[in-house]
Image 1 (cartoon, rainbow, N blue to C red):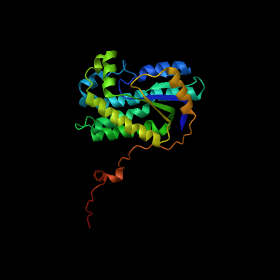
Image 2 (cartoon, rainbow, N blue to C red):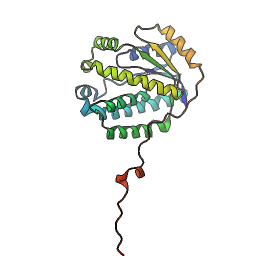
Image 3 (cartoon, rainbow, N blue to C red):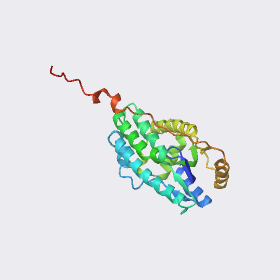
Image 4 (cartoon, rainbow, N blue to C red):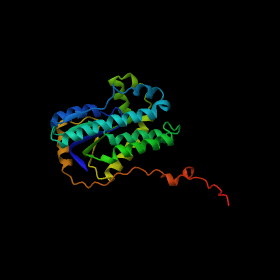
Length: 239
């Protein structure tokens, strides 16, 4: 299912999600939901040592986004707010975990990644609510790096261009997955900023497009019986 009035803004670090979130929410008379940056206790440590802090930071982000997600979906359904524009949805959380698991250095190990996916399944897929519309902002990695430098967050100075390129590739894969699940996707070339009035017009236009949702299923993990280590060895019975 999807929540009427739930708009997600997706894209790599530095593309311009937060600015669009604030301006579009104001234009639509929706509430902005921003990503927690200043309150993330792991973010600066993660950029300094991804291997040590990759898994715990992803779990912290999943927990934080899940709480945000439940709160605004409830407020929309109760009619307390018209809608929200969210800077990076809970669905995008899986992009980072998958990318860190695929990294040649296995920043997140296979064991930790499977645990993370189990947690995601139990938390998110149990109460699956897609955005009415997901806006995907795209720009060159070089442009994103320039914008990151201009906003001057100390913790982001260590971001490597290769990290952003990998993130962008994983975003392309993710957006295709969301389309396959029936989510409406509005792709915007954000190399240059568009006027808010034009974005608002496109939001109304795309929100009216038909959509057919399917269950978005994460890869299956082994069941207990599938793991030989769980099967007791035969013990000889005395005759």
